[in-house]
Length: 330
Image 1 (tube, rainbow, N blue to C red):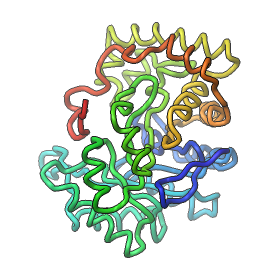
Image 2: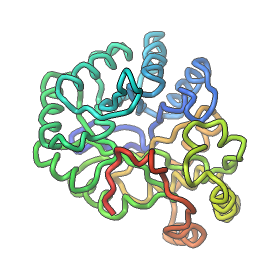
Image 3: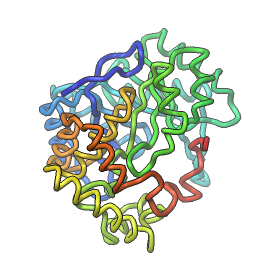
Image 4: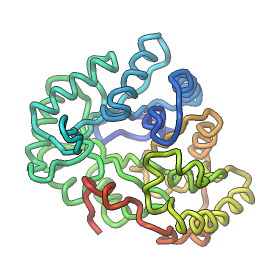
């Protein structure tokens, strides 16, 4: 497995990591035994980076990882996130990047994970009314205390990244990036390369659209996220599956699974990119990891772009409610 830097001053990690949101039932039923088997196989395949959050299953993802590590299983470079809260009365979601909340959340995450520090700690959603410079100072203090190795932000604009980086180097920005979602190429990829910030790409296979088994209406209905997401609602789902049939055919012609080709394309776009696909299945994991070992030529890249040109996807990547929090910048 090739390695990439988790920030200019960060550790080397595997070229692709593993996202741990799927083990909480976000895209369908899952079990702790399946998660343990997945983590073991990831380690065997050379995956060294595991990315989670305190809100994945209301802490369940972190707890599962903690029990896995406590059992003496192979370890990972760990990343987790904080900053999303819910009103205890109404259940409404809001964002809190205050020093007090972030410290409490980080300490709770460390306890769940059973570790003294995490290598990467993200702001999961930025609190719009709090200057990002102030947040960067809070996170830099955590780093000085040895609680974290570095810090990052999820779903922020390039301008926000530059403001934070003027205070302290930002190890990573997490953003959706794939053949389905190309917005990061309009400034975020470039800013990350310039600043030495890793661009940690979630949903790198388009939430299943860029695989050999794209989501069916039945699968969509079982997912709390997909069943309200524009790209997976009628008539967009049928249109998107039909368009990506050409990508599946190209992958088959090239002798690899579609998911492998999607990962290989993303890694070829920039040395700053570290995809973190999420899956519940070992077979799919193996397809994803295979993509990290592929080398695409300029001709290969052109053929991929021909079947999936920029802007091919029908429907926005988020619903109006899902857009609450991420920063739009183009």
